[in-house]
Length: 80
Image 1 (cartoon, rainbow, N blue to C red):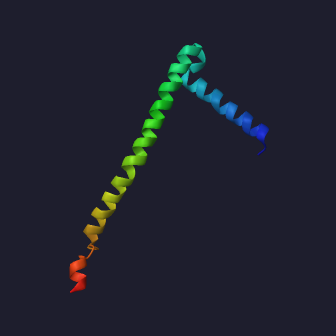
Image 2 (image 1 turned 135 degrees about the vertical axis):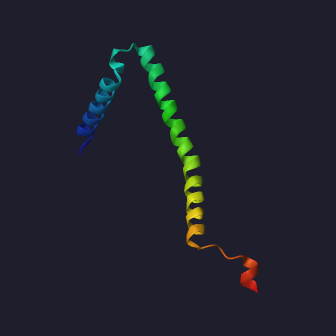
Image 3 (image 1 turned 45 degrees about the vertical axis):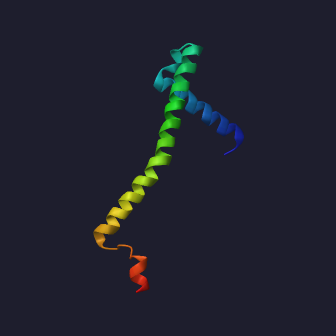
């Protein structure tokens, strides 16, 4: 895929986005507010996923390890 076709494809995606959200009907200042709000929500969602998802995966992994009986041994009991 060359640069020109990639540029055309991205423009096509942008046009599809405007059609789906009906933002092509908005005035420029309304588009600015709309896009700012959408980008802010997307950044907050990605940040929350980056912060909280690994913690939940780790907790679930520890829970399932505990269920199957693969518990970590205590360092003191290994030394004895």
